[in-house]
Image 1 (spheres, one colour):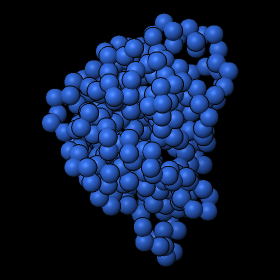
Image 2: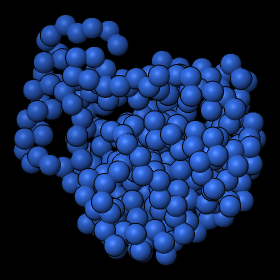
Image 3: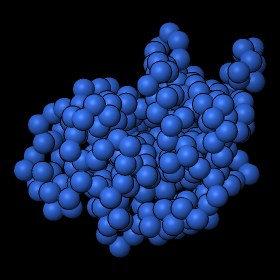
Image 4: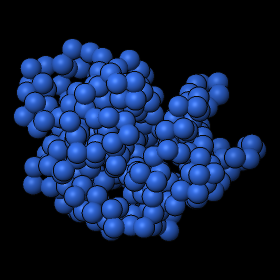
Length: 295
């Protein structure tokens, strides 16, 4: 049984081994006084992976899914509420920390994050806040005290998850819809919210500042350069050309890796720098001459 403090780390992966950056995060999260649960898609896992989880006392929860972290949270928490898990009783959860693998933590600041969140007077705390449309927490790291959990559970169970598609929502739009829906739920329940880091920019444009502030984390998409054309165009319209063209691996190396974080764990772009530069130049030129719909 847990002590009432639970971390849910949602990760959609292929292959039988966990990426190094996922193992790094899980290992150091397990060093806190929280019970750590890895929520991941059903697939065969290697003996090495199972030994890693056992050695670090990490609970494994395999589930169907397509990488939707909130859907994974929903299934796990419903199992606890329905008594299908001996990890904890639903009404004994005092602290709930939600993370997903869209963020790569290249420094071990988890104990600091948790201490700062606990000392914060807010009920729901994230690492960063976005001001797009309206101020709202970015839930890739979401620390929920008991006062915030009821609103979160209600939103999680009653709100259908927006899904991206080629014809409708992009990944960025689906994420934004989810974040805004959670913000409304917190507002209605009068839950106080706060980010641990404040920046001049927002969303993907803020990581220059976050790295400089010693946050020790970055969005995986910025390293992989895996934005679709719609999302690239949206970033360019908001003046974020620098965000798409920056060498974030160099920024990270200059900031410094944790002693046990290997450089090869940082994801690399799948396409060459030349191809990416041509794509950005074409998009940037097109945005200057072609009309586009308002966001």
